[in-house]
Amino acid sequence: MTWNTLFIMRHEVLLTLLIMYELLADLSDETNRTRMVNVTIAGFFLYMLAGFVPSENAALFGGMYVNDELRVLLKNILSVSTFIVLLQSSGWAKSPIHQGRAGAFYLTLLSTLMGMFFMISAGDFLMLYLGLELATLPLALLASFDKEFRRSAEAGAKLLMSSAVSSAVLLFGLSLMYGIYGTLQMEDIAQMNLNSDIHTIAIIFFISGLGFKLSLVPFHLWTADVYEGSPLPVTTYFSVVSKGAALFTLMLVLYRVFRYQPEEWRMPLYTLSVLTMVVGNLFALRQKNMKRFLAFSSITQAGFMLLGFMNFGRIGMTTIVYFMLIYGLSNLAVFGVLSIIVRATGKESMDDLNGFYSTNPRLGLVMLLSLFSLAGIPPVAGFFGKFFLFTAAASAGMYILVFIAVLNATISLYYYLLVVKAMFINKNETPIPSIQSTFYEKLAIGICLTGILAIGFVSQLYEYIQGLM
Amino acid sequence: MNLSSEIPLQYMLVLSTLVFFIGLVSIIIRRNLITMLMGIELMLNAVNINFVAFNHYLFPNRLEGHFFTMIIIAIAAAEAAVAIALIINIYRKVGTVSVDDIEELKY
Image (tube, rainbow over all chains, first blue to last red):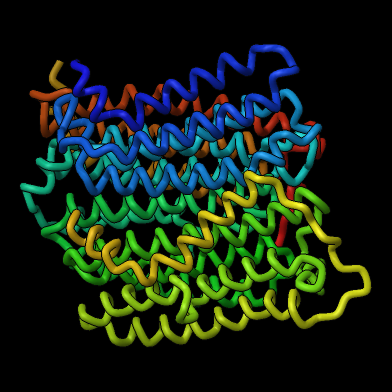
């Protein structure tokens, strides 16, 4: 254990320091609570910058912990998203009903982030499982954080039950994997390249387990309930950071560990992708609550993400990461506007948005651009993300799947435009009054908006990601 | 005592698979959150049987399977603690722990 080891693990080590701070600050007296929100955001900002310092590739602790440039990039994407979530949640955390509980919120939130980092950096399935549990258990606590509301309590219990089942399913797959290979070290497994029926079953169990976290369709039943019941910052965190971590882990395991058996995981993912897109779309059409609507929209987007897995090469991985980055920023922008509305008025139904543009033109425009980005309309980044994904799947010869995906993208345009119509066209006697947003909220929206507008035109970013694969 | 000469590995695998699916089915058909939690424990224990059996029969020279089992037991305890905390929270809000009554969030 040298300083260099600590530096390679800087994402985890510095995050531990931040978690320690939350723990200690929570014990201090009441007057420090608002300051605590500010210090956490400032501390996390510095932490996020430290993550961008380049470091060498290494495998530590007997190969349990692996770090390379790709993993650093994935962690940075997650920590930037978490930073935006922290900015958006500042008003929520400072509100009187959470007086004295902001420390607990940050503590659990950052613990889950730590778990996700260990999932990404895992060099051994044992480490992956530990990271997964560290990411899952505090998430259930976060979902039921507003414990005076019945729906928050419900959301927490539902999430914990389904995620416990999902990790048991994943573990069953891992136990079969152990029986086949005799080791759980990922690099050893990758080199052995065995093929058998039981191996396919193990992979299917593994994909099902992570599919719960990604909310792919047969395993999506918890998603809408948990998204609706949880406090809004937690919903944001679920739909971007938690989903991103599950996607990156699935990608790293399938492309790195099972790289010689791609045919075994392509067919399950093909089926899941079609189901996820279609069912997610159909359910999104009838939603009236914005949080439920965004839940089904994020299910549909997860179906699109699976398209990238059809391509086994570098292009597949690149497009997955690229799409996740763009999806994350667009979704964060939508949730950013929504969190401002909820903080000021507590309204979260789609009808409440009627006439929103007439009173809040700038927030309306941000919402418009980010919904366009989610739908994939050309000038904004969402189009490029979807386009590259479809290209990756098409270059692998999956024309039927791409056709289904294009159809679904068209259907999704309809319900995204429903929200736009509510904001810009529908009349309302009593629209939401003009809202003054705070500096933190403006900053969060600024980061997201810059990303949405710029990423599509900065081709260096795509090439940079491709260079890391 | 040499177990491997008496009970073949297949028996262990059949047992663990049965226990796993009994747990899964009990989660699906039971309406009480505590009973569902017991189902989850069954599933985790099935995984433990698998790990220990594979380690004992196939790879007796290394201890990875046993270690994994230890960690699963520890984490299952943590999971149960969190789950029971949440179930108590539900009980305070709803007055029951039956899944049929936890229905505020639907459709």
